[in-house]
Length: 317
Image 1: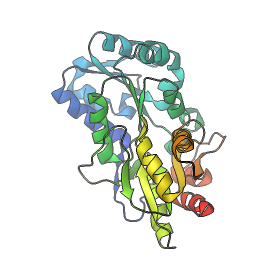
Image 2 (image 1 turned 90 degrees about the horizontal axis):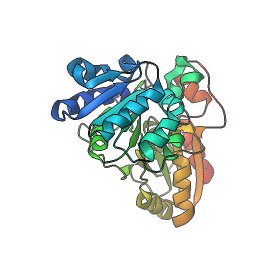
Image 3 (image 1 turned 90 degrees about the vertical axis):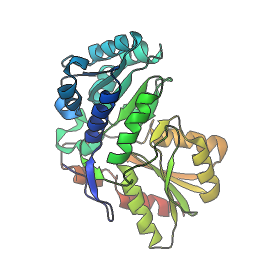
């Protein structure tokens, strides 16, 4: 399964694959990392860590609340736990334990939710996490990261493991276009500007970054220069980059593979309202659940494409 390559972008691996590779690499240099999975390690790609470090891998079975509790206990004992499952399972089923056993005591647990968003396609709505970022933002101590492609995910995993405190990283199932070079700079809390422009700003994360860049190229053909920001860290948000974009372009479109409420768009809008009010529009899943189907068809049906981003931008001009 893959999201169709955007014009000019080579196809890369899924961000879940990049996570699995980066985690295995980190395990080779940090013997303190312990990985815990909820019996989906062949899908989250933690199986690659397990194959090389079986003594530091725990499969708790289909028991996400227990998964979180074990991760919290490992962190309280001085280990660096990475706990993983499908995003909807670990965030929805394990939320009370995440809140009380990880967020409240501010333990150094790294939570990774795979198969997020509607681009998992045929798996259907019961397994499509479209509220996971909002849930993570509901826990005040959590850093929240949504990388865009294979190279940036490698760097984001390393940054997340190096940072102190609980964190949630969202990764996806389909192969996605590569928008970064081989050695991108990913600093948690600092957006990356991938394209300059003074007419409108497109802010995106995850698979929507490639779509935003494609939309910017389409707009450029019409004489509209769009700035593109990869807001890979939802919290801490790069308020300075948002404020600068609002002041310099006066118009912002936020695009995310998530409900329009409670995710990236919401926190960007709060920053804009406080520091530099401007016209805004939002691209995301609008007050609905999706359905089982081809990933590209679902993204088109629910308005998560470059064409939809460009249309929102035109509406602000």
